[in-house]
Image 1 (cartoon, rainbow, N blue to C red):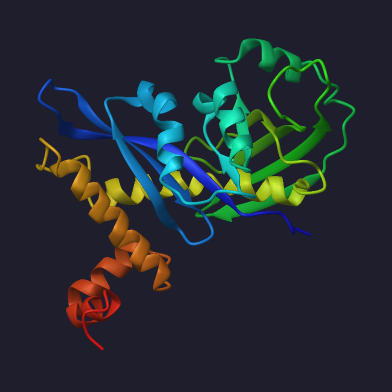
Image 2: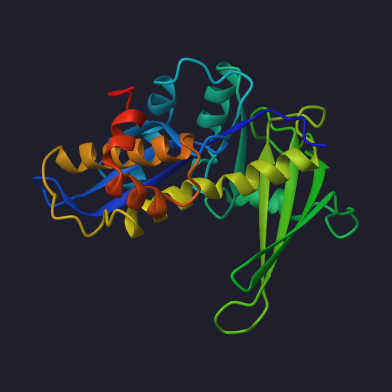
Length: 265
């Protein structure tokens, strides 16, 4: 049973068509709420490499993150981030890759082979089947990473892709949430929910053609990205699962859009 806390997903996206005065592409770091499908905060920066230095400032714009689990990509597996989240009463889940080689080696050396599978899930979508198996171990004391409690191994097997082959992927991760707060079902949910922010980015590109936009200079691309986030968030809160369908609906029924915005009764 999943009785764990809700999560927030932090992830960045480069707006490929937007350029500043120096010819740099606009990069936006967002905080996404998987439970509602909405964007809670967003911050602009020069490039993806700046995400680490803007991470705390972005989360500082949220009144409280106490008790939440913050999920990120591997770039944000940083000791400073772990300490910051702990100080604010939040927890983290970080994937661990080559940017933390010592930590990765320590987790990879754990006895995963003899660790039982704690959670299994299977999803089928448009002829594609993905099975996810999750294992959990307590983090040994010799793993020197701030406040970490549990180590996680997620193994994904995907079949039915375009080439017809079976593909296998593995991800190591760590969380500061203790086992009594984040069990296997909770960890399976928050790691799967993190991909909701990738879906958000996909919708901005495919439905709203963000990267192809001719609005490219100054602060306007950032403002337009905010408006796209707002439109997606409002559609999600109105109950739409398909944003393209929501866009078509409000285009055909503009009075419904005014009602959604609270401009009419």
